[in-house]
Amino acid sequence: STDAEAVLMETLNGAETIKAMGIERAIRLKWEQKYAKALNVKYKAQGFEALIGFASQFLHAVTVTSVLWVGANLVLGQQLTIGQLIAFNMLMGSVMAPLMGLIGMWDELHEAGVAMERLGDVLDMEPEQKPEDQPSRILLPSLRGDIRLQDVYFRYGGKETPYVLENISFELKAGETVALVGHSGSGKTTLAKLLVGFYPPSEGKISIDGYNLNLIDKDYYRAQIGYVMQSNLLFSGTVAENIALGESNPDRRRIVEVARLADAHGFISKLPQGYEQTVGERGVGLSGGQIQRLCIARSLYRDPRLLIFDEATSALDTQSETNILRNLSGVLEGRTALVIAHRLSTIMNADKILVLYQGRIVEEGTHQTLFDRQGMYYQLIHKQLAAAA
Image (tube, rainbow, N blue to C red; front, side):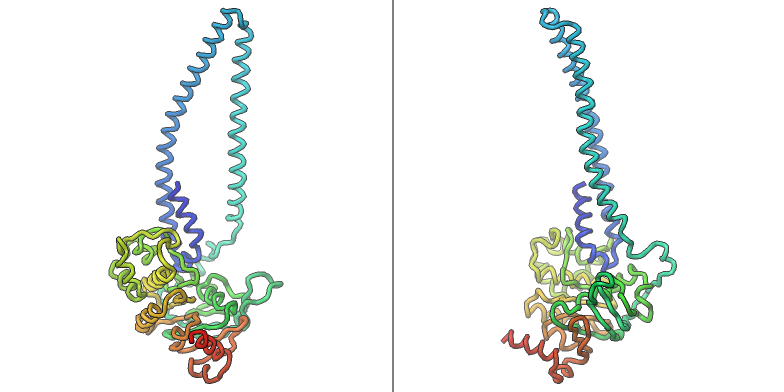
């Protein structure tokens, strides 16, 4: 039961990661296996409890017999009448049994009430993809990576809340690398989540390979993209299991290959058990940079056609970032990539750079073009270079 609950809590905490990878079914199967094992243990425990219950009843019978025996001696000694003994025994049984039952029932009713409230919250949630819409969903068997945003607006609440993104329009052709830069809170992460399909646009349209993203089956789509989030999450299990998350029969060679690309093979090899080293929930025992490198390796494992990196190298030192960028230069060829970053080294070689300010694209172009223009991009780079000096 503890293992099943741990998997369930870990799944809830890592729901965004699981959805981004499209591995909901694999994680559900893992939980079902743990739960089935817990039920088996529970059935065995109930058998033991039944034995204990029998022993308890036997002890109760012995206790009642002992009380009657003592009472009989008191009656013989004229310290108690027969009527008093019988009345005492009847009243004791009549009062104690229902009272104990009520106490136990009150606890159970209270727990059931709390559980029903939580269950109601879950049941009231609208599913991301309704079962009745399944026949009309578009399956993408082979993602090319052509992305187009047309007049996209987005806000998290209703009409009374302000827009987080406004009038976003750009094209990302298959094989291109686009960098997204801007101040914190400008909407970069929100835009990445829209491209992954976590939220539908409030207005406008997002097209993937010419298809409306709202109509595409999200599981098939996300299974073909690699997404590294700002909040990187590892699950309890081995290093290899985390890199090949959701795979029932992981490819060991592929695991090592992507670990090398993410500059993670070196530190993994130094772990006591290497790739079989168990990492705790949320990557306990590993540094932020090591967790980030494992998440980059995980995003590459399934050879995705579309890569979305949201500050994927923010926790890395300069040398590690340089190694990863050098390794990825070959990987990105022929793949579509959206890179959100602040560091100049990460973005300057992108085919196109978009500058976001207060939810709007205010500049667009190559590194040299934007730098020569001396606008907001120039200010961001100048500020970064001044801080590094």
